[in-house]
Length: 526
Ligand SMILES: NC(=O)c1ccc[n+]([C@@H]2O[C@H](COP(=O)([O-])OP(=O)(O)OC[C@H]3O[C@@H](n4cnc5c(N)ncnc54)[C@H](O)[C@@H]3O)[C@@H](O)[C@H]2O)c1
Ligand SMILES: O=C(O)CC[C@@H](O)C(=O)O
Image (tube, rainbow, N blue to C red; front, side):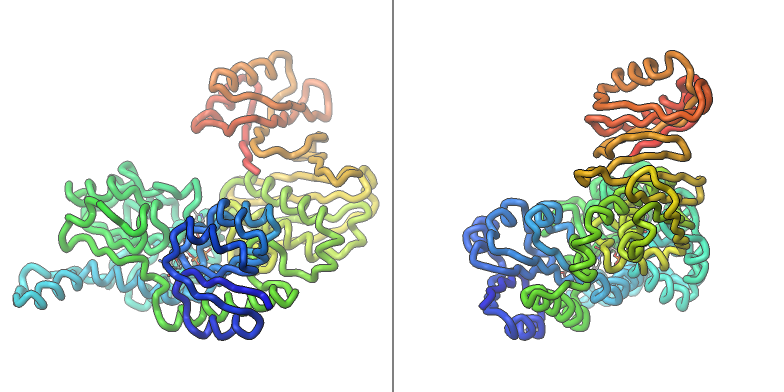
């Protein structure tokens, strides 16, 4: 019989489901070294946010087939390490949406009406009605950063409370935002105009310290900020200073850079700060939802069935996946690449299946293209199962065409993304050994393998331009691994594709476009 380790507290209903197919050990509060010592015995690990599943733990889990996260965020699991070892990572993308949204709203009202401090005051024997005069949220502006599942529910309730709604989410269409009753604006405008700001975004390299000293200084002195998303999206030291100096009025935080919080200058502040110990998902209902959702998936995978919310491995029919796997990887790479080239919000994705591929089943390739396209916005939380629905919710229109007459390669895939910043297209194919080749960029023929750090330029084909770009990158200590020019005519428009050993430092793109002859430059990280 299989063995499952549950290393964080989960609802009993989850344990009962797992017990249908496995021996279940519930051992919470294990130290990392204790977990490493025992994990080798188990086929599955079920966690919440308390257990950090590091590469070391994954390496020690020699029998592990699946890691189940009873919640949304998988940032406490080293997903790439699990993927490399063929371990499925599943989560519960929706089980605690309502709980987290309601917690954010409760935090907003607690902050406005000083409920935690007023409660403490009454319990300490006082009857102080002057200190705790609050503010109404009615007719105030709520700025929602991240209009996904939780952000949308917050919007619906806040609207019913009579609030005016602004939203910032570069991956959501204006139409979708309007349907939810929000006006989509740039982040700076939201920060300047909102009375309350609530964060509902994943923690990614782009969102780490998104709210820093500079952005705090853009807010109204009366503004209050709520973070029930992930610790580290707000720079906590900068926040404490901004509140102390009266730059903003207050903050309510459920999540912290370090959990448990430990020493923090936020703890010394008074009624203008409300802190809870990561309770967003802690409702009876949410814990039942996520326990069922994840335990059922662990049970299914242990029985050899696909998982429905796999974060890293497709939940499509295994036979189809096996056959199309290399092309799905191609589609995902091209989707990721064209999404980054197109920049902000993509409204339309044209997917053309060419050559032999034109006769194939297209649905897995469309799904894989969308998964790649949405990776920038959703990171590990977009998967083959939810990519289509996530794209639909973001108002991304998908057009699928076939052209069997294109015979450059046995089969190739052409993706064209149109967004708020323009249109970009990329074509790719597989070589005989299954290696991916980028074969066309914005209409210019190229022949390059994708690499982790890439730079693309649109420029005029003229003497000296390559040297100037090389020297500029050198002056920023960026090493070029390979470089190729694609052009249609000599001394006409051309593209340059560079594979770099290092990521491009901030600010260098604007320097590149100052090089005479270079019109545009784009950086892509795959
Ligand atoms: N406190 C808790 O206990 C608790 C509970 C559940 C979820 N969460 C966290 O809440 C957050 C939101 O969860 P969700 O289920 O709504 O996720 P979601 O994927 O449905 O929505 C996230 C939204 O953020 C947007 N986004 C991504 N990068 C962005 C950026 N740089 N700027 C602005 N928007 C950006 C995406 O387009 C998406 O619409 C996650 O971080 C999740 O881990 C916390
Ligand atoms: O497990 C929890 O209590 C927190 C879960 C929450 O942060 C999530 O991302 O789903």
